[in-house]
View: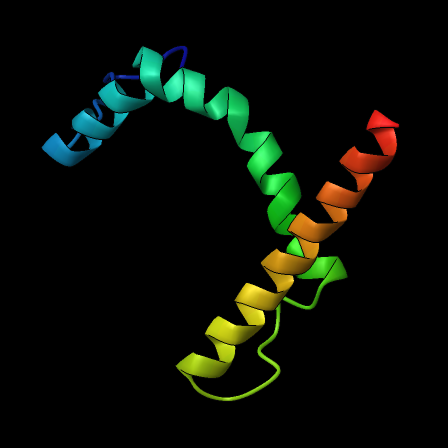
Amino acid sequence: KEGAKSKTYSVTIKSTEHKEHEAFQNSDGFKEKSKERYKIEAKNSELKHRHGYDVASSSGLVGMQMQGAMAIFTVNLKRIITLMKDSK
């Protein structure tokens, strides 16, 4: 500040993990993948909100795997039907 008797500087020291992560985020591969991410997120949202994949309907790992398989099968079947209608 004006008229202060001393000056203070702030220097951020990044860990090696942070530096590696920052370098990865600046890479071309990460930028390409991030451009496609919105498509995947839209599918995940559809699974969660429209097909009940957000909450387990039964207990246990096998029940959750079955629920996931059925939800993904349903979404894929809807997509196949849509593509068949569009091709006619």
